Length: 222
Image (cartoon, rainbow, N blue to C red; front, side, top):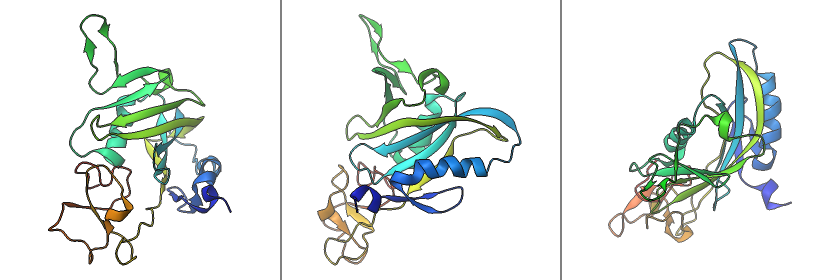
């Protein structure tokens, strides 16, 4: 059995089933259709798959109305996975940069765009793009649009469709489920993962092990 099929399961938020990562896109297409009650305004919704660039066990599926902006998507990612110290962030789409605080080049003018762009104006089916949070100890995400569908929605907003289950990290000393990380500030290191019993809080700063690619980075606590 391949690693892709065997690992990285997640839960569909609509039906609560646990599905392998490789099968979730297909599952959600049917699950969303089955739960469309046909009420509310007709909205164009973008289905976006998101995963960490270096740790594919961390992933999300979200649905975002096309009339919302990149700033809305950035806020969602911060709230769900990233926010720790108010760092800068930005998207790169088709070699264009969209920043939470665009940088200016005094000689050539603005070289980064704002995140006020509507989703429908910068994304389409098949678009692959990236998001970076914190330009020092950076968390880099890969995103891709897998579907665009129109549904009737009562209260349009970003919807979390599915999320990975917490990876089964083990304590480096006793092998029991890990709950803490002695943080270097640069993320997961399997030799720095401990259970509550084995952690030595006096040696180094420890942080809770949370279900996010930001775990162990900077001061992120979930």
